[in-house]
Amino acid sequence: VLEAYRQGLSPAVGYELNPWLLCLSHYRAWRAGCHGKVSFLKRDLWKVNLSDCHNVIVFLAPSVKPLLATKLLAELPDEARVVAGRFPFPSWPPSSTLGQGLEQVWAYDMKEVRQATRNSPAGSPL
Image 1 (cartoon, rainbow, N blue to C red):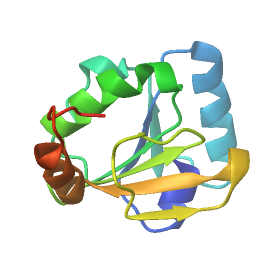
Image 2: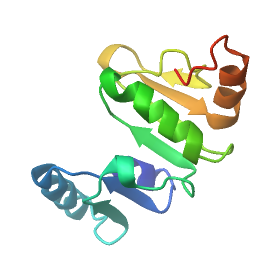
Image 3: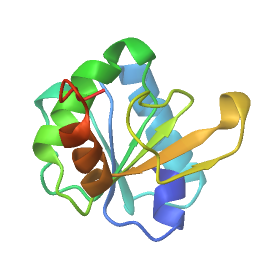
Image 4: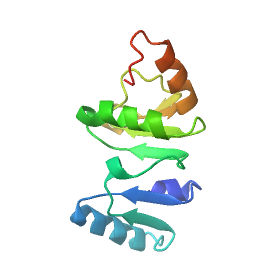
């Protein structure tokens, strides 16, 4: 969230249920001079409506990617970009990648992902 804000993305909002990680996020924002410029909310990602989001950054385990892919496909606009850290969406075509190993990230443009999903044999979100 802090780096997204530094790169000019606003609003920059993070969702977290773990109170310790939420507290740590607030502290890091304060320490970085971003207090009041970014938000960290105690919300369940699965219950948040993402339809007005145009940039989504996720750091989640591969086991939740199928459910997340379905949610993102259903809610995000075509103009949205999803950046996945550490674990890619295996069947989504990345628009770009950066880094390698544990530091690798994949960027996906939702319009391209939807086209690829429609063209896949099973229409699978992953």
